[in-house]
Structures are given as structure tokens and as C-alpha cells.
Length: 360
Image 1 (cartoon, rainbow, N blue to C red):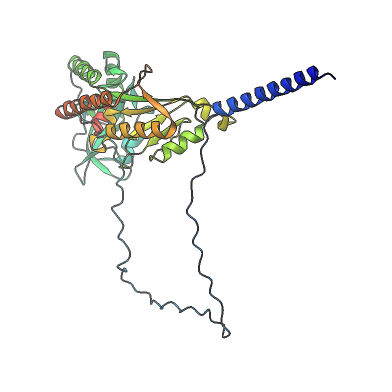
Image 2 (cartoon, rainbow, N blue to C red; image 1 turned 90 degrees about the vertical axis):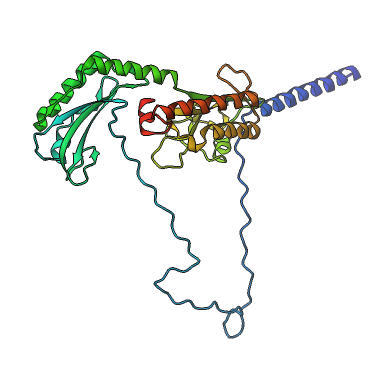
């Protein structure tokens, strides 16, 4: 073999090696970032104590503590237990309410529950029945074993599907009438045209003051794996949601909607090999009317977006992909405060039962 052939062979080997090395480097560079093992504190190792001839350990025996019925001062008292969230009551502000006269009779909760219709909706609007408890005098959804002296049926005037219309109102009348007949009552329905006009007015207000904010976080370089996203979000208090590709930041009160939710491609979460599923963007969402302003939802949305952008190597953008600068985000926060004030003035404070029902 001549020196020229040897030189060409060596050059070809070097080129081939370079191509292989480049492809390997490029594949690693484009591989989704993976979750890293969390550092754990080193376990405490007890000091070794040599046994003595008499069988004792050589260490002083702990002082014996006699049991007592009083609580030791070292124990901290338990905090208040969470109170279960009550179902929202009918409200004349956002509901059509039809009283059902019982002619002085007392009706059991069992009878009222047995007569309830199979579906609790009228078109796209929730239908509800409430009764006045004989003992407490409070209006509540019927409960088995309780006795009630008054009854009313209602349907919501508006929600995010639109305003209550004439067809839905007529369906409400028929459903409430059947229920009243089943329990031996007589309903009194308000004027349809007046209630439909109220529904349209309420729907117009809701449409002008509804707000659902979303910040998109896009990867600058390497994509993210689902495990990496979960790890980064969990450090900020997010927990896995019921739907694949969704995490939520829980409310401080049990039973209330989450403060924020984080979503990404559900197909990546359901992949057979999620470690190699590439996620290019995640979205942080705030449903403004669903969360009370005392939770500081916008500040937490902003802080979570900045923290994730730094930890994941991403850039914050709007829905159109335009980068959001900090001053632009602060302007959104100022507008949001004005929205909160307007909702408060109309007795529809964000996070209240009425607002959660109207904006749903």
C-alpha cells in the first residue's frame, strides 16, 4: 500500500470519527432535559458505644418519664381543622328563584330528595332546589332526616355559555312544576321577559369583566421531558392534576379552585417513553374570577413564571409568542387590580361563590 493510500485511509477515518462525534454531541444537545435526583441529607450515624463487662452499654441510661394525662408543654397544639366548602346557595343576583308554597305543611328531606329530577341542568344552566330547615331556619339543599317548612327552585341566569334564553326558561318552568307537583307544592314563577332581560344584562357584564390570564414559557435551547417539568414545578408547590399534562397550585382553603394551573402537551405525558418526550413549551394559567384576590394570584403567577424561566432555561411569552418584559407584566397586574375593584363593587368579588358560578 502506497503512502498516499495510507494517508487517505487515515484522513477518511478521522472524518468518519468526526461525523460520529458530531452526531453524538448533537443528539445529546437535543435530548430533552431530565429530572435530576434530589440531594438528600446524609443520615445521622449514632456514636458507637463499646459494651462493658457487666453488660451495660457504658452510656448513661435515659431518665424515666412517667406517663401523665396532661399535655406536655413541648407538644404544639393542633391548628384549626379545615372546614368543608359548602355548596353555593341560590342568590337573587345571579339566579331566577321560584318560591314553592307548601300551605303550612312540613316536608321531610327524604321526600324532597326522592322527587329531585335526574338531571340538575336546564339547557346549559344549573338547576337547584333549596329548602328552609325547620330547626335552624337556614336555606340549604335538602338533607335526609331533616324537616323543612319552605321550598324554592332556581336556575342560573348566565354562565360562560351565555345568558338564559326563553327556551331554557320554559324548560325551567316545566321542571320546577313537575317537582312541585311531586312534593305537593305550588310554584310562583317570576315574569319570563323580565328574567330573560336580567340574564342578558348579567351576561353582558360578565363578558366585559371575565379574565383568564396565561403566560407561555418556551424553551430557549434543549427541550424538556415531562419529569423535568414536574420536578421544577413541584419545587414551587405545584402538584399533579387529574388530567395528564396538568399541574395545579392548590388554594389555601380546601375545596376551592386552584390558584394556578400549569399545562403542557398531554401526549408527552402519556407517551410510552416519557423520558424522551420533548416538550417545547408550558403554559401557566390564572382564571381570575375563580380565585380570591387575598391569595395574591397574579403575584404568584408572575413569580412562578420568572422562577420557572430561570430554572428551566426558558423565555416568558404571550399567546402570540411575543416575549413579555417585566414592565409589561406589571402593567397587566395594575389592570387586574382595577378589575378586582369593579367585581367587588357589583357584589361579585373574585373567588366568591357567586363569581365562581357566574364565571364557569
